[in-house]
Image (cartoon, rainbow, N blue to C red):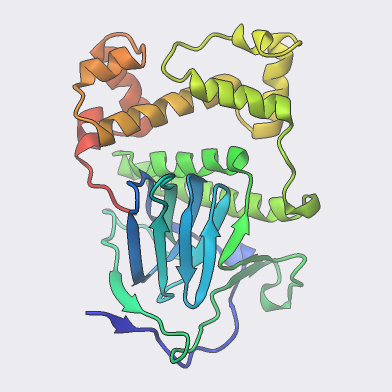
Length: 313
């Protein structure tokens, strides 16, 4: 049964000081959507980020409609009606992050509250879908505060690794330190969003040389890493390119490459029925023992268990 959108909501953003932030990650994952995949219209009890890493589609937040393309970061708060639909030809690769700005961690991951909903712009009152974070709370100017709203454009190269790390950390089995790690990663993400706003035009492009190397590393993710590639793909010494790469993207070429390999392993586990040995061979990971040990170390759980996790955003 569809619930109507809530009415009578004050037209002002939720405001919180940076010093008061104690964010809790409730759920985080990465999903390669099927053609035409959709979720919503729905509402949730938490706050959520949706980052479009690849593909395209459409997004609706209350009565506003958006074209969802790579680099789009969508935000909505509790009880805000939203819907996403992936393109038939170029479906989404999405990162989803459910969170609360303040709260305490529990011993077990709390169940998410998700409900179907409806929103009619002609009838329902549009709520203020913003959260404002500033050092002085409501007295902080908009230039000093981070204001999260429906949609903003980001650099995929810079922000996908942040969302990927949060999703990987959430999947870890070691609960004793997972919560503090997630809190720190989310605080870093929020700070990076504010820093990104201060760049000219809110979006500093990645230099073509570094972007091209990132694309090459992504294309070679099934192979073993070779440091000499960096020199072959440029006119510079590999060590010099490695320094430039890290300065631009925040990670070394090797770490970026291994991150791509890990994501490829996850895709093969989630979207195929290939046995683990075949996946290890496909990724040139050596023996199945080495592959399992490496995957668990970086993904937080064994590949077989990862395969059994249901897909959800």
